[in-house]
Image 1 (cartoon, one colour):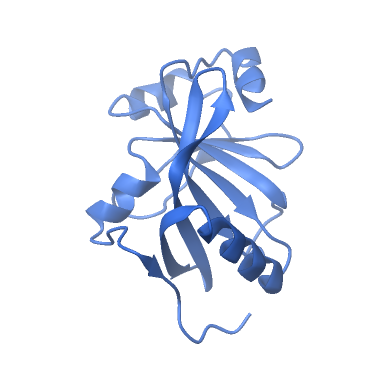
Image 2 (cartoon, rainbow, N blue to C red; image 1 turned 90 degrees about the vertical axis):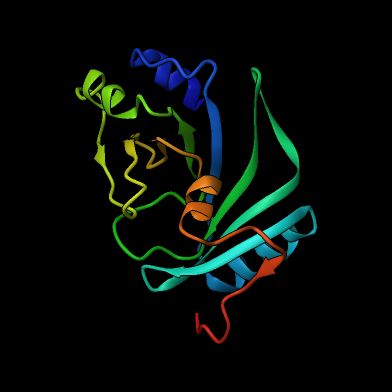
Amino acid sequence: MQKSRLTDLGISIEGCEISHLAFRTLTYPEYLEARARLEEHAQANLENVWNGRPISKILLRSPLDLGDGFSVRMIELIPPMHQCVYRMGLEHVGVVIGEGVDEFGKTHRSVLTGQQYQGPVNEPYFIRFEDYTNVKFYRRSLKDVCEMEGRPFAGFVHVERWQG
């Protein structure tokens, strides 16, 4: 659906890597249950606190086939929202544009919703659709960004003592 929506806006993602799928849960207990179920299929989980709550970056053992030649190995699992209105369930798809992401942003400025600051090496452009789902466009994959920030994917790292 998101690929079709992008095509309708004049954006082709053919040949682009899918960085990750972001999935939001309505409650913290749902987050913990989803995390446990996803970890059964994962080689690593890097969980840290972001905007006051834990977020998991789960690296799957095998790529998930999305069809049309696309696959993904990372799920970003996000517990209840901290701001704004977000879609529960599949909330966004991360697309790696690469070093041309700023030119991409200029070219498609008229259809982009904005740009989000997520840290010094991660400022994706994004489109928010009417159903509150998003597509975010990155210079680097989420996995690469985490590793650049000194957070390698080595085993299962969980936030300790966080109260939901």
